[in-house]
Length: 385
Image (cartoon, rainbow, N blue to C red; front, top):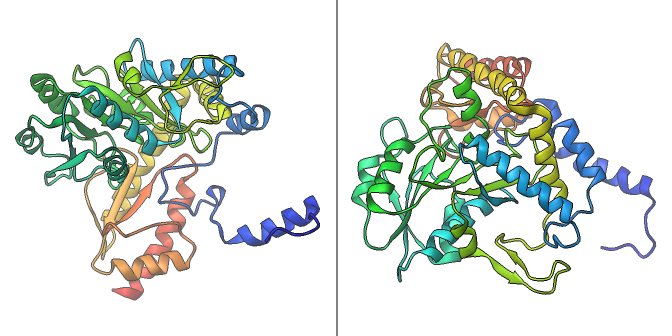
């Protein structure tokens, strides 16, 4: 309850420190199952300095709006798009919802349907519920990528779009986006790529020599891409991104907000008030780290993933779900429930609710953390097998 007399700052922090001791921290190296990470030091400074900026009222913060537009443009260029349209949003969920909303609004369909892989993120369930769009699930291949033939077989007159995933949440699988793009072009329907995770990995991994499929606006069928700077981009939470190929998609979801300082202002985002500092931080990190800086981050993450996968293959009692495509390694076991419980009891931030344990090689995850995890895993396996 609200106290009658206010607490001092010291009392507030003392209470917070006491209450939040149960939280895992990225700096501990114990969080291995998250796609978020500790924000880059520069991003922390940006948040403190520009915490008052509100992109929901760009008439008050014109410079912040210009910075956001430039950040979106840089994301577009990273994704092989010369002129980008979009926003820095609250995360991949909002970005995916905006893409589905744009596809629905542009289509002239009474009973809209969206075709997506069974590996798609749960945010599309929210989009379906909010927007009245029926989800049509496509089967997966043995390697957990979407079955392109099944996608094509499910296209009807009600289809408003197709979804492909570039870095699935569970396994980091990149779908055959070029084949999905061909289908989208052939049938005249838009393709949305959920690259919330892979968007800040694949361009740099490809530059490092890793063989990965094209996934972005280089492909004609791709009309929108979700890309999250608050994942491998190391931006402050929340900072997602939605990028559209054409202005018509933004126009289809823009709503007039007439009472704002900027006069006749349109908003496409779901949230009205939006943190300008987060968008400014995205711009600052892209400028500060540059392509080569991000490439170094991805290099370490990809190397850790390959090394860790080999370590898992050497252990009795666990098995790889599949060879990693990106910096995600997932493994299973017949004793998965016991293993998960034991690992969590030792403080590891992991989850096995999908039927396997997923380790995400984020920037805060170092080789020594993985070695410590493997030491615990070996001890647990000796007990439970």
